[in-house]
Amino acid sequence: MNGNTVCNHLTFRNENINRALEAIRAGKMIQIYDSDSREGETDLVIPAKSVTFKDVKWMRKDAGGLICVAVDPVASKQLKIPFMAELVREASKANDMLEEVVEKEGDLKYDSHSSFSLWINHRETRTGIPDIERALTIRKIGEITEKKLSGDVINFGDEFRTPGHVALLRAAEGLLDERKGQTELSITLAHMAGITPAMVVCEMLDDYNGEALSKERAKKYGRDNGLMFLEGQEIIEAYIIWQQNNNFVKS
Image 1 (cartoon, rainbow, N blue to C red):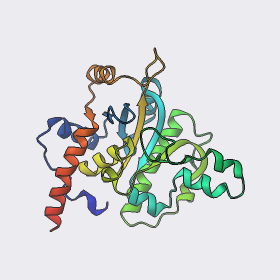
Image 2: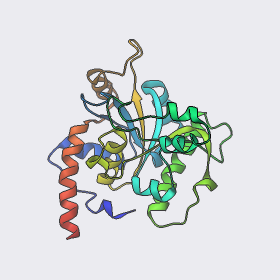
Image 3: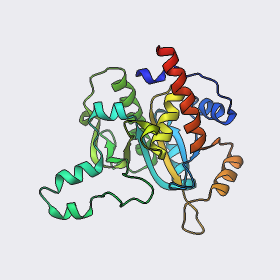
């Protein structure tokens, strides 16, 4: 693991944060709501290394959004995981239509850029789409992230192929200092918990109105299913405290 996990068992005044950190250390699912001013969406979130096919089924059936894996920015850079928009811009040199569709400044109403990277399958999967095969791919992403951050020599292509059925999200280099999406919120929480910073996120959708599930209904779902619900602002405030303590320990 890298040096960002120095104070991984700091206790916070906000008991929601403490309980959420305890949950993800145990490999359990939690909920994260980004903010009213951003996507306004709640995601189911779980550490990648802990995922089973039952968790994939849970997210697929009860959340309904894309099942993605957010990856730490240091690990992403070391593994040479690109942003999808960068790939499309490079490919547009051979196909000018791609230049027309790739995201541009101002396209996103909630941020300056998306965090999407490759869509992959693990090489041991067949089609890659069944819950058990997606769970394998997800766990292997967690494992390879941990190994890379521990200094192991890893060739990403030895483990994975693209295209596939699991979407990778590359966290911003500055994490919450740079971007405050579900990608960065979940990876920041992983660092604060002292676990491998590869986290599965899946948006919760509403079966009845075609929209994202409202915050109120997401909270009720969490209460009914014993899940910790965190607001993005709670994570941001705890992150500031965590950073200050990390800097104190390092000094």
